[in-house]
Length: 520
Image 1 (cartoon, one colour):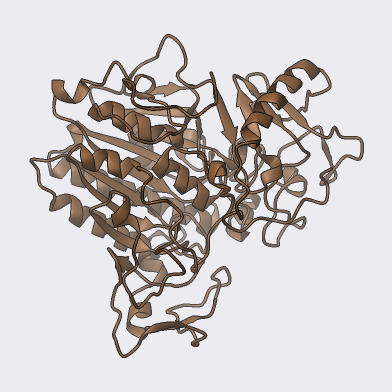
Image 2 (cartoon, one colour; image 1 turned 45 degrees about the vertical axis):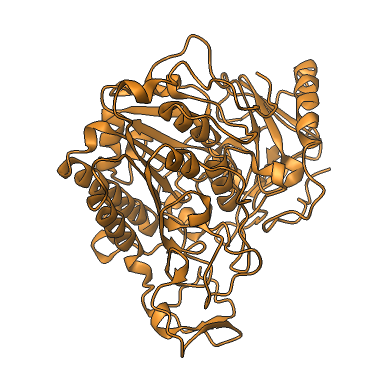
């Protein structure tokens, strides 16, 4: 498969007339935060119970080779919405509270596609893609933002739950803001609760607005707000709900009723709250008589993270990323291979699993295929409708560019092969268990994994300068076989170089780790 952008204007799929044959489905996309490949019961977890999400898998299809658009939160969300690799915009890391909108208003999104097809569209939860044309002024209209990208309604938090400002935004405005108590920089922050993993920042003021943001209530609040919106939709029109939970990003702040319910600490308790949120959405769809004609997709923005909660969960016997090597931010599989479950009665076979290669990038073209819409922009998305609903004679996607935090580690997947042009995973560089930002070689043994390039938590001095893995025979990436298959490595290196040439010369977007000390 060519990894060049797809030029649209051609018929998207044999299903292009699907919408005309029967009512178009409602679409609910639950986009979890930092949920690892091993964090759900239906993906092998034993230290945490996820009955509602497991039921989704029993009623639908579980994907075992699904990938986020990036191993990092903000660029991953960019790829989900636009169907474009974030590296094409030089987008590598999370953006801060001072970021302008990172998506060009002229670039179509999954919400645009569905809105044009007559859908009611809403997004709840974590945004983390910036607001405005310049640094946002929290006392003014926060536009452009989600409403300029195809959503009719937005209610959520501006960034991650560890990043200020700790406020809710509804449509274009901060919720609860009073004119005589503005939000501003260099004003002493007053937060409902101080937590070790919450960045204090320099944003203060807005006491009433800040008081509405209670860490332990975020999950329940977002769930109930989403349900309220579902209950009030026009039942004569289809809808698209994108619920971007703060679960399970740190700090781990489940509601009191979930504390102590798992066997892997607050990390697992936060997963159990996520499972409850999923159950509440499904209960609402059933109660409204909507479940039979609703496509429900459950997935995560990137792999699990070795923050303090993740490390504690591993110590308690939970494998956050299953048998995969690596974690959030990195290019090894654990950074971007994610859980993905699809439920759509009478279309998606129940109780099935698929090992087809699929990316969050593909939702753009797939949703266009479902609605019979044409796309207007160049993109990297492929219509995977036949993959969701059956088993296509030939795989729809056979290749993928893998986008970690480190630009030097941009890598390529072709068939079963993965080529990484440099040592390590290009993610977090912490080298001490029990401290923040643990990742890379130092994390391998701690996560109960092995890799032939790593010994005693460091890259071997004689390790190859690049990496090649066959995921069919070695899905856990235990053995770098680049010396055994030099021709295959050269073939993939040439493909990757063509993609690297597309990286713009503009200033990179988002925070990027320092260059790894163990790379050449």
